[in-house]
Image (cartoon, rainbow, N blue to C red; front, side, top):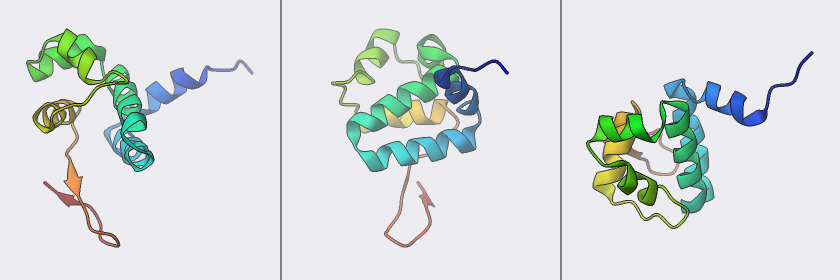
Length: 101
């Protein structure tokens, strides 16, 4: 049976919004750098930076810089990106389920 590269499988799975949300939640629990890597993975899975730029109204260079290793996205930019990916940001207290924002 032929093997499929891990990244190809990951990107295929991240096309599903529920899986993308779970993946990003797990990445966020690992810290900022891992979250940005995860967010880049979801962006790649769902059409890439050009598609994201069109959906958010942000230019590609800004998005590349925002989602880079040294990126420090503003909450407003992060909100636009997450919304364009068909997701929502939420905040929860320990022991509670997520609450939509």
